[in-house]
Image (tube, rainbow, N blue to C red):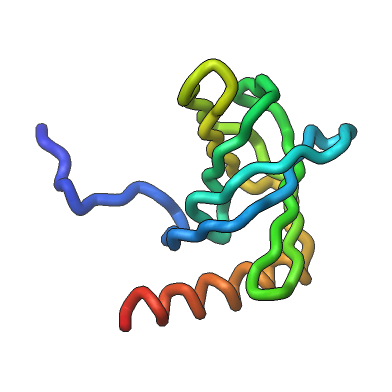
Length: 116
């Protein structure tokens, strides 16, 4: 059985986003990363300098149009890009109401600009 190439199994639609973000293990200090795409359910980003494993919890903090968003997510995928860089996908497990509002506003605005 072949999959429809247009089929997307994600629960939430993603929009491309490029910005610096802060990433840390939940009880550790922050490191900087670069966001690649974002949805209400998670984020994909690149990160240099720290090994992470699937299942770990990370806290991400990023600026979305001048508003700060912070959430805790579970690592669902790690791809090594080279000896130091990793592409990491997180599924959000803890999102405060204020952050959810910031995410929804940003995704709505980004979706409108993508459609234009």
